[in-house]
Figure 1 (tube, rainbow, N blue to C red):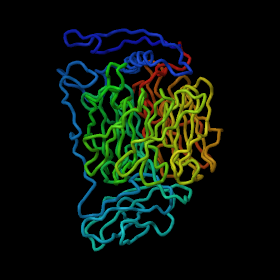
Figure 2: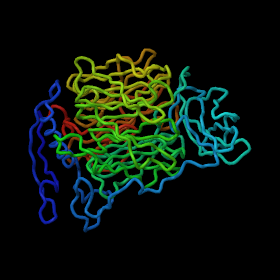
Figure 3: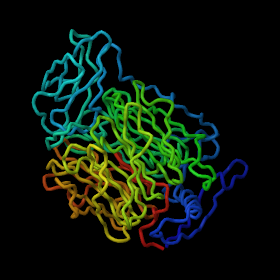
Figure 4: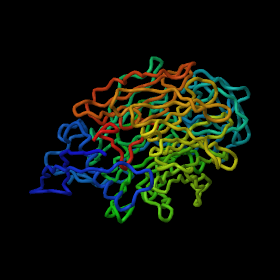
Length: 605
């Protein structure tokens, strides 16, 4: 049992003469059941928790937030926007164009992706009238050091000798000249695979070959970007909430390269505003003006919630679902998933809706791009519906995600299966991406191996300590010990996270245990961020939102090495004083709109 008693500011509850009064709300929630809850009761609990989390977890009132200050006549904040904020549209941003009609348009592997083969097939589309292309594989983005020069009369070729593990760049120009395409990057792993596939997106927002780390907050209206370098992470830059964005950056994920310019982009949610924001990468890092995805007016997830839309409560980079050379993104609202396709000017203005299966209630809060599970060249996506104890996998294709999902059902004894979903990477080094699912109420996580038919029917079950909410957060960790097998990380709500190494048969049940400050939120957001310092070992970030009033949240880095990860990390230096700092870490965030004792340590009453 736990009790929350906090002042809650909500203009929708009390508003006098245009000003919001403070309302103190006290409520008690019963212990979480090990069986599915009655939906009407759960809906009531959701509504109470949404109000409490939105303000009680904050370390400063809105007037003290460093995010873009509102004009003095802006009026009270509402769930959608301020009184003076314009209603944003998807065309608000000036988006760099990654395409040109006179140079080849690169198609795959998607820029910033991981590749399974040291000789990956490189594919492109030729401009009209061109016959064949010259291709350069380079050591650096400017191609001052060319590793291999290739010529093809077709629209594909592969390196003639195996590439070394790490980052590589490539570009193409038509035979006879005409100009080079934008330069793309990809990351080669440590094991040669017979299957040629690619998945994921390393968050390299400035294209220098080092993974960058993004840490989001709950309540402070900002995210911080820590750039990677040979020395590790550098001093952060801050990304402030645009006007009207409430609960900005409680979700933040690497979106891949949405416009084909070769740089990773970032997707940030602001679910209480029904908004999501796309920030585009460049040689200077993330550009400040975002494209806005507006969920205002989308159908609510359920009449039990009064038709409220939670657009932006679940977000994910999807990979390239339709294999057109542009990454795509997903935005969930609990009643469906909106698919936004990338293009030469970034995300499209219209989305395609994947509706929730009949009877499904919490469809689309946990969701993920899970790589290419069947290695057919199209990225696949997974949508959690923990109320159904299921995960729905939609395989990619030429027109986008398929309409009939592969349903992965939680094994007997699992509850809230689908509470988190992630791409596990390739844990058994067979060339197929694998699926990772958390079931935190039963304290388990499950790995489903990819193959020609998609995810395996039977999963590998990993168990955590009882009552720990093991599985609340899950992520592919990358290859932290450079042995050729990708590893996974599973977070719990007991200030711990667990790293399971990959093997030829999948994963082993004996993890490395990462520990954080006692009674903190350590482990409630986890991410495999890629190789931050370029030493050949992938690294992991863990968010540490605070559970104590007045104590700022943090985030910790765990650097890969030949022996794996250390059990204690190092703090990312930050000037942010919000309790909610560390709520999300990109690539993957795990803040979810559902009952969990997020503002107190487990066992508090």
